[in-house]
Length: 161
Image (cartoon, rainbow, N blue to C red; front, side, top):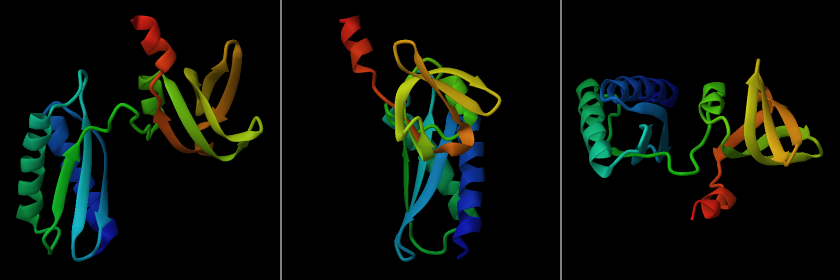
């Protein structure tokens, strides 16, 4: 079983199923062991996803994976939401979540740090500009982003109440 090919096909199937169901395909991953693989698929939707949404998508993906006999051993399929602090996996994700608080880990130091927390203020070409403090901005080349996640903005949440 070539995990690279399996991973690519799982991604293709998951993307087809989620988009057909009106969901956003966020990402997929294969974990576990060769004997007990775990296929994880993360989906999203404006307004969020429910347990029922995940179950429906799971049944459809599992049926397609079984039809293709893509994974020759018994496997576990997990379909879930990416969560409140979801990962950002593309420059389009940064555009979509403009204005939101994010935490970046970079592959190189930028402004003296490899970890940057701030609000997404703009995306120009392949550069993401974050406001890290009132009036202070840092621009990060997207190619230097090793990992990025939304962060819950507790200050904004407490101001609401």
